[in-house]
Image 1: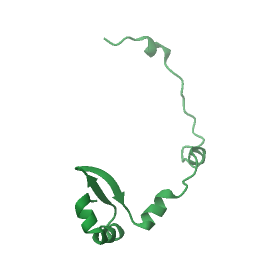
Image 2 (image 1 turned 90 degrees about the vertical axis):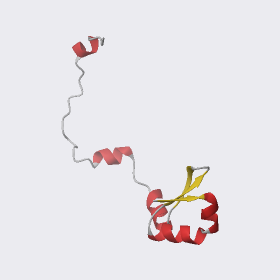
Image 3 (image 1 turned 30 degrees about the vertical axis):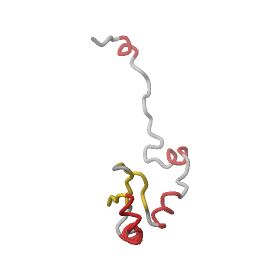
Length: 82
């Protein structure tokens, strides 16, 4: 990812856009800190797609159906740390 100072990005906006399309995200800094990222339209479309709910994710897990012991060891809870 390339970094551009705001003044340089303004003066070379066409290049920033071209590089975002061909090379990936371009970060524009403001006062030395990252402020915004310019991405191609196709990258943006990929980021905003609905990815589903947590429940859907869990239902598609390869671990679905595996029994997991979530019990707690009560003795360990009583041990004090020095």
